[in-house]
Image (cartoon, rainbow over all chains, first blue to last red; front, top):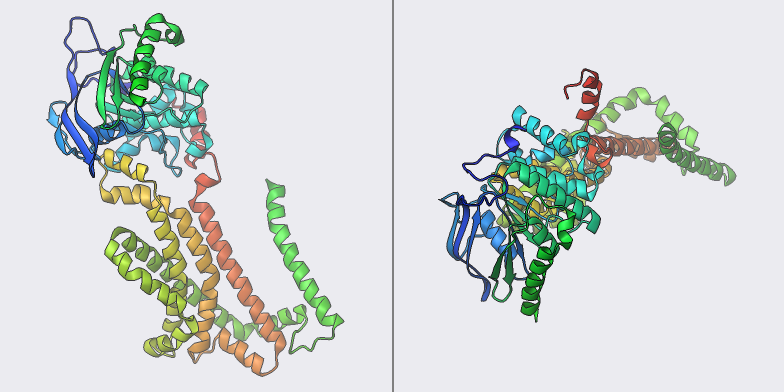
Length: 272
Length: 272
């Protein structure tokens, strides 16, 4: 497995929360603000993400969640506020996080293997170790037979898996996933969620996940952040205590339904 | 696959055969004078009869076309890159490029020949470059300006330098538009060479000069024969470029990269 299992400076296991052990803060946003013209896209926002945790952000269009993502990714500099990752100020700095969108953004002229090693290729020489790791991770997660395929020859679900593997082998402590399964059909999406939980558990990474799908947010996350538009801001931060590992039965669990009701009320009230 | 290839070759050949047959029938049926239109076989015969004199001239126009095409492709690509990277260059250059193409080439051919010398191939190559660069510039510029912004952002998030982003993402993304431009250029290149030859007066003679003389001598067979020869050269250029395109875009035609074949051969010893 080698470098896939990140052991970045933490005592906490893949589960993120371990009773009685104080979690390490990985990402800290304080009073982050962004304005486009005279529109406040993101009002002063504070957010703390613990190392190894899985946090989802839900909210309607225009609530500033993608702006928040782009600020964390370093693509946008906030007008005010601080972005701290692993204790370092990363305001406006790129090259710090993993990043994946609804579009798989695989390059059509590269094989699956070469797409997985894309982050390395964009920053330095791709080493034999990079290739080995790409092959190992693809084999481990069921794409070993497709290493030489071009993305065009893969299904949508497979392409998103490749995109996620590319994100994983970039070895960034924080993975930003912006609606990665949004374009997939419901069946494939559930498969991908289960798969993602498995990979996340084994890799010990921290995930910040944007979605429109409340079920998806609850099913995957330790915390669900609810955002609201005009101005974009966080209106609720709901912990999800449902035990892991989770399987499909969780989706009909009473605790699940209770959280869902709470999130839906928040979203619905804000939309009116 | 074999049958498909056969059809792919046979259908166009048949279509050309039908054209020649129609030509033959019309000439014979309507008693067309040979100086107006010879029988196709007579035209071909005329080429073979004079092949000893013609072949250095054929070689000459091939060389002019080839170097002009190469120069035009290179210049066109560089223009496109400069125009896509520096907005000022784009603003300055675009109107002039359009003007350059709005002027009839033959009008430019005269001063170009006067500037570059009457008894050299330089003005001829310059005219081919003049004709070829434009479709290349327009298509590559279009390709460069339409590279997926999300993909460029992804590269930025990974901390890629502009140089690596250019070589790893922007250049491969323009391969298809580049070849669209090159294919247009390839069909025009021979026309440019012919115009150049008509205007300049190479002491060693040229195809254009030979056609002009044959026309003066009412040698319809040679005029038609040489015209057919030019057509064959033009089509060959186009086919070569199309073949190069197929070789440089394997991902559009095959499900897997070439490496897989090598690996499959090596598979019995099985690393995994």
